[in-house]
Length: 232
Image (tube, rainbow, N blue to C red; front, side, top):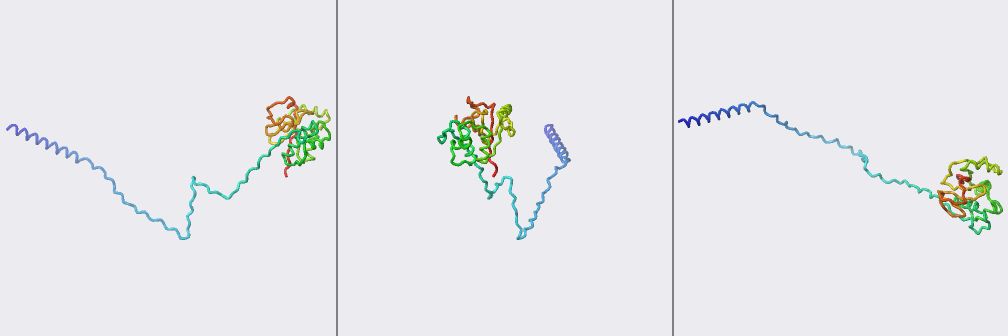
């Protein structure tokens, strides 16, 4: 039977192929198996003695506890009160310097009940121009204030000296301070104002900024008296 024989040959060939494949696969090394992890028994910490304490350190984000420190408030800045030269029904027409003196004296809390007219009469005794040296001496002797005379225009010094003024104590500066009152005169025989914190306290024209101009003012001929109170 030719068909049966052919079928037997095919079966035999298939069997041989299977045996060959099984033999080849059995020659491959077996993959490594993961080792079995042995559980470790952690030893318990040694207990703290009864007297021991634990200090917990604060973290970087912990809130700082409030303390009993008392911060004193800073001193309130002084206020310069504007005064017109007509205050107190002054009988004098040229009381700008006296008004400046009273503004500064009140600023430093050394003034009493005096008026602009009282100061003018006490300072020069008549209705006339107050020069810088008279004004300086009056502030020092009457109120005990320190006064430094400065100019912002150096050529004015020879003019002062020619008119008989003592210029030995005058300092030339580029600018005047703004944090203390400065009684400012724009020429030797002109008008006095107080300059403070960026403002002119003008006994005639009122309060206005340094940058504003008045026809009467000549800042290129400025003489200033920087007025301060001695340390107590």
